[in-house]
Amino acid sequence: MGAVGQAEGRPAERTLFGHPVGLANLFGVELWERFSFYGMLTILGYYLYYSVTVGGLELPKTTATGIVGAYGGLVYLSTVLGGCRLLGMERTVFYGGVVVMCGHIALAIVPGLAGVAAGLILVALGSGALKANASSLLGTLYEKGDARCDGGFTLFYLGINLGAFIGPLITGLLQTHAGFHYGFGAAAVGMALGLAQYVPFRRNLGAHGCTVPNPLLHSAIGWVAGMVVVVVAVIVVAFVTGLVKLSNLSQVTTGVIIAASVAYFVVMLASAKVTAIERTRVRAFIPMFIANAVFWSLFQQIFTVLAVDSDERMNWSIVGWTAPSSWIGSIEPVWIIALSPPFAIMWTKLGNRAPTTPRKFAYGVIGMGLAFLLFLPTSGTTGKAVPALWSSASWRCSPCVSCCCRRSGCPSRQSLRRRRFGLR
Image (cartoon, rainbow, N blue to C red; front, side, top):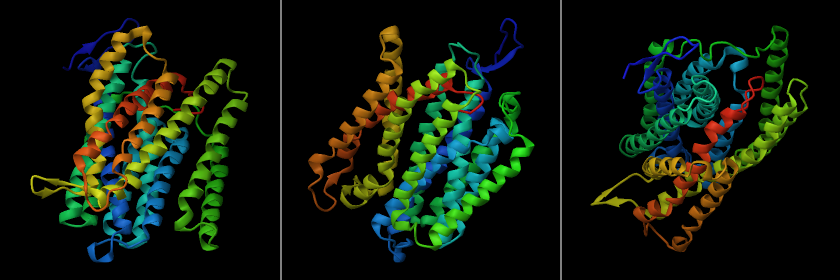
């Protein structure tokens, strides 16, 4: 288990089950980060629109789901910021985790919309920094062409889904029996546990991710800080003047994400620092980027449309005991954990006959559409008449999508990643 491998021309490498020992660090911190992220997200919508008498903020339901959607968009937007040009990937993972924990603490102890605003902004920024850099850092543990890389990402992906499965179960129970803030507090504890296992063993990562491949020049730091101040000022003015409201926050966030994505690719494609081959690879990544965006926009419905559906129309009675509605967030990870091994075996057996990565993405997005179509037969029901088991079975297409899109996306992004720009 603790074997030490010796590769020709390279120093000895500490391994764990045949993989770089640093994988265990990243596996653990990502597991607990996803525990906290999905554990909080599955109860967030209910916190926003439940009545004050049961601990909610009693916002209109459409506004509440819009805020949840906007928050999900902010998380993905924050991955563009990265942070590794200032701190390096390894330190960005650590500080990202700290920021995430602080965000969950704010949700747990600060009442009202003030706690929601502070908490969600911190969690979004921290999650974006941690998640983007953790997967990139994992890629640096393997040499180019290392046959173990695909297996390493499979294990990493397993950690993601274990955390995503356990988180909603714990926070849902706490929200139901103790209150929302206890659920948010559990998310904070989860992230703290992830940091507790990560910090003592950071040395296992060695020098990986410690250097900054394209550091931000000192002369540019002031310019960046000024831009941040301007952006914050614009956001404040937009809210004060009523241009941006809670009711249209999701639409505004969508527009900002589209603009930022276009700008990101334009900068990379137009830069003189990018070679012709790299520019071709960036262009090749654009269709997968779009497919990935479609997938994640549909996936986010678990915490908005499907969360409301789970609360209002699903019967969560299990042998006389009623499970929390938020447990719908744990359905997909269970299917993924169960289906990932068969898919891995299938891709391996197919070998060169396996679909290309773009085809896998296309099949995945089509499968996600089919998953939503399976909900149509029960769309006309009233009351809590839809058995949770039916919904669980209907959602089985989504994990197949994940095994195509999410699983294929990690190594492909690594193979296309441009060190100078941090394309992940």
